[in-house]
Length: 520
Image (cartoon, rainbow, N blue to C red; front, side):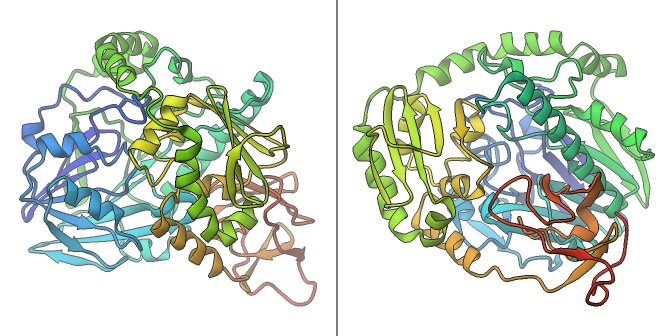
């Protein structure tokens, strides 16, 4: 098996039985906030433009690059479609001209004339109805797990398809917290430091549990070339910056005894032959070292090359083409009328300050109106052209357009509330109904396990991650390393949000735990 790394999460997998193009991303996304790092512009698209199969793991724009697919990828390819409950990914690809689709069933292997693949789809409201997916590729001699951004809460279906020779895993930040929040600088640094550690520990947990011979960190970080966002780049290994790069994570792995990690840059080629692995790079090692050792200079040169794209993206934004209140009311009030569980979960008003025009999304009364100086627990400051663009483009997922751009500020009273952002991920009737049904289907977990002298529920109250695999306990605080949520181990109180709590009691009280007895 031969794998060419295309940058970020992009892979071109070649086997004797055919080729698979995975998640090619080349064009800036999220209002030109994100660019691939390192730069992959020098790659020749003709070398991988006619694959036998195309795999797009999910709809995030650093994985679904519509312009690249439209301009460079043959429509004769067959799309490997994850088993998602809604079909928006399929619709997007059909709109781009793709007509041949192979509908996979979650975690069930498929034989593609000599190469076996399986796609494991992870779907929760926190990731949107089409959350993420991982793909296994087996050519009979080598088996690869392309995990990209996915965070499977239950690893058993995936591990049952192993063991794996190579593991491609995401390790870096890809979210706006805590940078956009109106916290003090000291608060931002403390929260960023905690998040950076959590995300690396989570990736390390996946690496250890998958147990592949060779590990390739990928799927991030993006880099930020706009003047307003350039400070987000981690150019000097800042412990409070969540966008650590590949070299940093490889050092983290080695410091924890994991020696199987390998560095890739766009154009690197991996050859897997019955357990053996060789990697060749497109440029000398000294040039690769310079990308990471003098990252500030590399990014400055990158920024200068991409300045025309940044200026074009800024010029393309709409300017007062809509009556904003009327448009927001028409978009959101029909959804609020259907959102029984999401409205109850938010339980407050959300203020959108769009360049001074202040509009309330009232989840209490399910209405949208101009702000009348009433209290709003959640507050956003967003440039009006960005909101207009979402409305004009009829965006169904404002996280996958607006919020991931980092081009806003936020403030809240009280802890994080996942229902707020989950609503903005479901800005269509189809998506909203999925989220409502998902929440309606949640039930209490009876399965328990013993951790650090306490019996706790096995599934995290947040998004049901398996705490037997993802719990980390320190100083009486249990952290679920899947998403970083924390609980007081003695009381069960959630320290991240007031939306849930953890069942906990002393070990030996009312019998033993029914789950695994292990000290994570």
